[in-house]
Image (tube, rainbow, N blue to C red):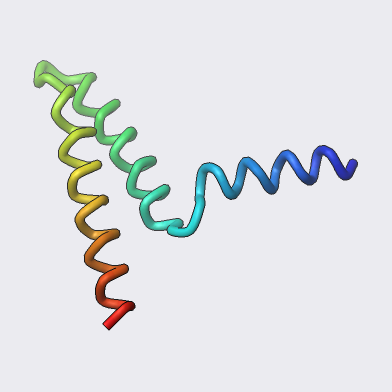
Length: 67
């Protein structure tokens, strides 16, 4: 049981990490990509835009905490 618990702790730290908002943003971006892929619009652009936005928000939030 300890190994199973250790695995789930690792998985939580790997996926969620320090900022749960980034992980939630990636899940939302994947959902939006799936929705857009179901239409006639190209869906390749959704994830790069989401990653850039999430990275910017994460860095901005970290910088605000430091000052």
